[in-house]
Amino acid sequence: NGAQQVGEYLLTSGKKKPAYVGGVNDSPKRKGFLRGLGCLAEKVCLDVGGATFSDGEQAFCRLHSKSLEIDSVFCANDILAIGFIRAAVSTGIKIPDEIAVIGCDDIRIAMYYNPSLTTISFKEYEIGRQAVLQLFAFCDKNIPITGKSIVSELVIRESA
Image 1: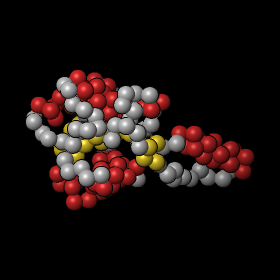
Image 2 (image 1 turned 30 degrees about the horizontal axis):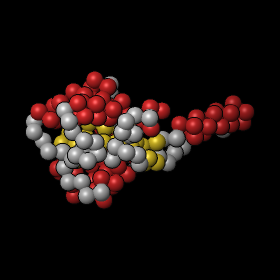
Image 3 (image 1 turned 180 degrees about the vertical axis):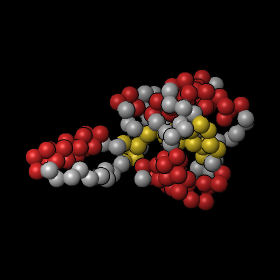
């Protein structure tokens, strides 16, 4: 759901040349992102970027070396996004003027990085709270643990 929100946001923001940087096991995020992009989904540049700062930097270098004119990128996690931004800025690219960058997870540094990172927040506190409530219900009353859906939120900051 959060990845779909990112695609919809970029589409309504007028972006025309999006990219996705993700890890090997990120297909649900990639699919949600493509679903949110609608008609732009067929134009997405896909890059398997891993999960680290260095992987994000390398993903930027790969996309940049191919002379792809991307105007936005959704990274599967905030660490990748920050690495991507770092590499882009080091080559003189202005974020978000030339490339809008969005991450995923809303790690603490995301709001303090420069530019602050637009990201998907999964509200970890609520996830933990729901898990503990279900665990207590199971231990106290033998109520089966079920999957709960937690709504994600696209947090708009300076990078997009």
